[in-house]
Length: 522
Image (tube, rainbow, N blue to C red; front, side, top):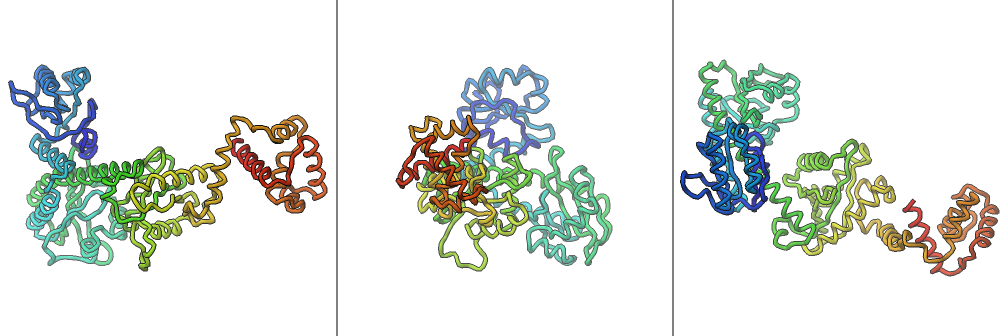
């Protein structure tokens, strides 16, 4: 299922803008409005091709709403001059603005591709990638030199077949499918990426260190947004007419890069939807997209300086991808960033598989000495999808303890499993169950607490230390930084204020749980 919000988000603000949200139902098709006929049906997104007058826009909105269509797409100029937004809100019809630079032909192709992808019927993604390679070859023929097509993150999307002129940077780029870090640093230092992001003008770079050949770079843009670029090795000057032809190839590339970005964005949103269903309800059908189990649900702690949850998710996803996990299973739920990792007991490979417990432990081991705020807490093993919600609850429980300062992460190397701290969890659960806010149910603590408040005594602290050290006066006195005789005196006075049978193991356990709950409440 794909909603209009998914559709707009996947294609981006450079193409579409959601003006009126509408009912948020599933979008199944895009249709062109024909004059005098019904404008779509339930599940349709109606395209107002050729609509330029406010009266025509209002009439089309009425027809689309009467037909039960989910939404209407109009050009930006029409929406901004017609007041159609108020009409759409009154009709309960979603309204989408198509940016001025986007042709209706390109919009139809992109919208249908994304909708088909959401319905699982798209066979075009591989075709788009094949087209990128064909365009790279066409660009190489224009400049008579090798070409790569890269996105705005320096990831290589396609490259030409021509290899007669090359350098080590190009070879590393093609083999690694990403521009090497030292080459990226060289171009960044020369301001190349800043110019690509802010201008549509071609960029020509001179030769660089280690035999780096000159490059002619054509930015690829859509609606002012930088989507990627064409990089051509340019040992000899490229005539202006050839550069114009290359810019024409860039215009053709823009739609294809938008398609790929939409495909990736929609795929991510669909994965998040399935992952949420598994984490919340253990849905077996949604779990079909998961790697083999057993699994552990993990809550990822925020590194220092990261407070926004979306930024927190981006940081972790960047770390995961850099460490080899191409599709991290992370999702934001209930104010926490969750991650589902596999925990295969016989994973004895030298290099742990990305997305496994060993892999995550290695990442945290490398980062936690430098950033103590980077941590992960894990629920117990889930051998079946139905057990995943229980693991999620345990991870969330550990996260609350860490946040409250009652579960340190430093000694664990940044990774805590629920079975490693089972005793702390049991005690916390028991203390929570005592519900001291409902009263202490009798016993000595109410009287001791009142005496401490009225007379400045330390009966509660004394009793806590005595219980923690099993009645050993030396250990309890050392913890309180007093003399053992002082501790004995305090215990006698305590018994006079509120007599209590400390010889009973059950009484001692009940008192310690109540004291712990009181301390947590404070």
